[in-house]
Length: 377
Image 1 (cartoon, helix red, strand yellow):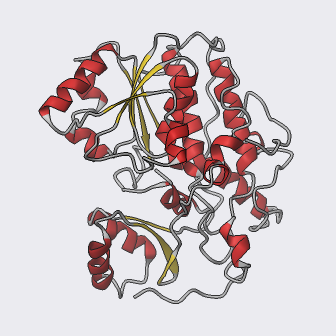
Image 2 (cartoon, helix red, strand yellow; image 1 turned 30 degrees about the vertical axis):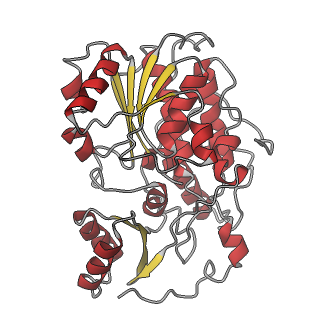
Image 3 (cartoon, helix red, strand yellow; image 1 turned 135 degrees about the vertical axis):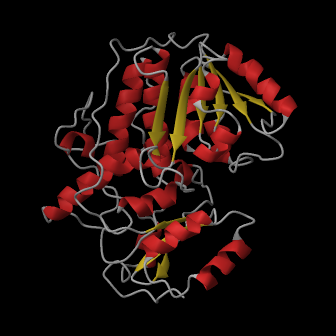
C-alpha cells in the first residue's frame, strides 16, 4: 500500500523539533494581517496576531495536526471523521497499487474523504493579492447594531466573527445540538465564541430553516464555512438568498478557491498546508504543530467582513484557507530559491514579512519583530 518514508533531512530531524514546527515567517505574516484588521475596525482587537494564531499552545489544547501518511513517491494528509475509518480502510485497499498521491487524493475525494496530497513547494503558487483598503478606517462604534449570523465551526470562521463581535456587532452563532462545533467544550471554543449569542438551530429541517430565515431577514452579514455542496443543499448560496433578504451580505470561508480544481474538495487546515507545498520544504512531508492556515484565514476573513459591512466590498465575498497561506508559500519559495530557507528555523521574526516582501504586494504596515505574547476547521 503506502511506501516506507525515505530518510531525507526532515525525516532525520529530532522528533521534538518536528513536534513544534511551524512555517518560517508565520508570525510576521500574521502580524501584517492583524494590522489590517485593526486598521479597518479602528480598535486594537487583533493585536500582533500571535495570540490568535498560537491559541492551541497558549491554551494548552491537546489538538494536533494529522501526520503525513507516506504513499508511493510522496505522502498524503488524511483527516478522518469519527465515521470515516472503515471507508478509509476499504479505499486504501482498493487503491493500494496506485503510486501517485495526486491521483489517490482525487479518488479519495470522490469517496468524500478529506485526503490531500503533500505537494512540493514551487515558485509558481498562486500570486498573493494586495489588500484592498477601505476608504476610511472604521471607528470602534461602527459595528454597533450590525447583526451577523455565524454558520461556521472550529477555528477560521469563529475567529472572524469573534473579532467582529468584540468590535460591537451582534453575532448569533448557529450551533445544532445534533451536530455540535468540533471544538465545543474546549478552552479554544470558549475564547473563539465569547462575544456571541449561541442559538440551537438545525437548518436541515423545516422548523430550523424557518428560524434561520427569521434571523437572516434582520441580518447584515451571513458568515459560513460549509462546503459548496452543503451550501447548495441548504439553499444558502448567494443567488438563493439575496432575493429573499435584500439587505444581507454573505461571506463564505472555504478550504480552496471557488475557481480552483479543488473547489469541491473536503479539506481542513492541515490538508491545505499539505497542498500548498509548505509541508514539503525539504525532502520529506512534515505536519505543522497545529493547523495554522485556519487563524490566517480567520484574520483575512475579518478584514474582508469589515469592508463588506462598510459597503467597501462586494455583497458576496469568499475567503479560502489556500489563498490565506499563499503569500507564506510564495515567500518560502523565493527564500529557498535564494538559498535562505532553513526548513527547521521554526517561525522566526524576519525583518520583512511575506506580504511586504512579495513582489507587487502592499500592506498597511510592515511591523517589526512581533513580541512574544498573548483543531483545525
